[in-house]
Image (cartoon, rainbow, N blue to C red):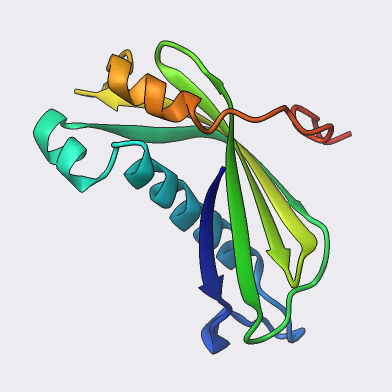
Length: 141
């Protein structure tokens, strides 16, 4: 599992005094970037290869309200790695309590099309494999 931390900033608070919806996704996006850096998909890789991850599907669950100045802890797990795609799961906690989750399907893209992961990147992503949580893969009913 990869870890990312951030703190809720005053400008992220909505008119109800809680973390506004788009900032959950912003923090989850930063957590994805942190995993990319750890797995070798960082800026150097992008400059060298022209390839990156593109999110093609996302499902966010907002479970608890998050207040101003909260310390956010995001853990990122890899649920599966295919030839050209990776499925990720982020879990956001405040003080150890689960407050939100995001499940992502990402494609490895170069030159405007999906391309296979290099072996060393696939291996690096595999080191973060974790069991699929019970809430993953659900649709909105």
